[in-house]
Amino acid sequence: MKQLVTGDEAAAIAAKLARVKVISAYPITPQTIIVERLAEFVANGELDAEYIKVESEHSALSACLGSAAVGARTFTATSSQGLMLMSEILFVASGMRLPIVMANANRSLSAPLSIWCDQQDSVAVRDCGWIQLYCENNQEVLDSTIQAFRIAEESLLPVMVCFDGYILSHTAEPVEIPEQAEVDKFLPTYKYPYLLDPEKPITMGAVGVPEYYEEFRYMLQEAVLKSKEKIIEVGQAFGRQFGRKSDLIECYRSDDADVILLTMGSLSGSIKEMIDEYRGHGERVGLVKVRAFRPFPAKELVDSLGHAKAVAVLEKDFSPGSTGALFSDLSGAFVNSRESPLLLNFICGLGGRDVSSLQIREATKAAMEAAKTGEVKKTVRWLGLRETMVGLKP
Amino acid sequence: MKLPPSTIILKPGNSEQNETGSWRSLKPVVDSKKCNGCGLCWLYCPEPAITKGKPVVIDYRYCKGCGICANDCPVKAIVMVEEGQK
Ligand code: SF4
Ligand code: SF4
Image (cartoon, rainbow over all chains, first blue to last red):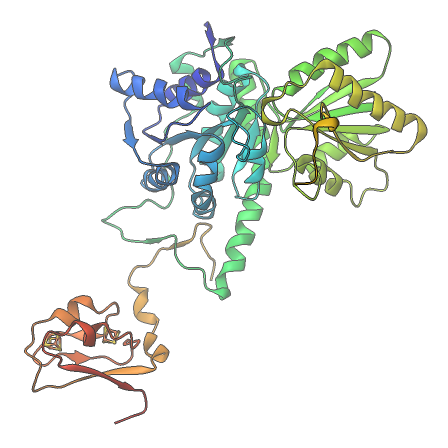
């Protein structure tokens, strides 16, 4: 059945369909509607779950550790400053291999204070050991959230489902809502292998002295790398059952493209429209969308971008003093390949600034020029920046 | 030995294997005449280092020398002395 829902509602409905047993979250814009809806579902009896109220995001995720450790299917949601406040516990959740699922409505970070969209929040915690999936539209929010539980439980890793604040979180789109019985079939009840059980005492979250610490970190690295296969497998199984499959990346008219744009999140939708326009004029331009940012699909990207002459990476984040995060990961992916396309980085859409078709054209044009001349004039550029307003002296 | 993937210790009670006595620089000494056996030091000792009784007995294999017992004893029956003295 199709329903008109916002991205936040899609995440809440997905968590309900997954029959989560525990929700612990703290409200923060633009994610609040997710936890409001879930609180309503619990209050009116539609969802049989424990809703744990807490005083901060740090506590919310801490409560989630406990509930995941007793084997309860656990969900939380946050955004921006809330994710930052959780950051200490993010690393604990992955280190303890607890399969928590979290929705993150992407929002910029203070300062300056901003409640609007960019992806700096989740990108800033890319090293926390969580799987990170980025969504293009509200259907993907629902689909990826349902898949996230199976990926998490079968890889023993926490999963963050990221979607652009306001652009998706507060915008209603028609979304196909699957039947409960179908989701039950896709997501059977699971059993956590190391149950916290007073009858059988074990130590969880033990100290890792220097003789052991490195092995535990290596096991985490192997697990996150291996989860690639799981993301593909679960995406295919979802496709077989619901008719919409997902993968680590999505290639849009890029197979024969000389110039490829690379991005993640809702911007992919706008870029697809531009690609169709370019194609209409006979220009060989394509898009590759990154769905899984962690594990990073390095091989898949090299395979699908390697034939291009130039790749323009558009991203709503940057690492001050370096480049955009997606760009630096992509550069790393090409490091030992014999041939690499020219790579260009475009920082855009920070703090909720709209990424216009003009800006996408500007990036495409620069990449086309690089493809033609074999030379990149400027590696990192900021789209839509009003340079006349930049005062560098106090 | 294979480690489990989670940071978990599956066999309980293994803190006994970790003899924390080697950490000590100050050593608690019980005055058996003053000790009234109230058990406060036993309650507050963070290691399995004190056996209840009158007087209490300290197991120096586990006593790490933190001095909590001496601080908490209501009749000042425990004094901390430099390791190697007496
Ligand atoms: S010094 Fe500390 S560890 Fe030793 S017996 Fe006293 S309280 Fe216990
Ligand atoms: S606290 Fe002092 S009096 Fe009480 S049992 Fe310990 S040593 Fe004895």
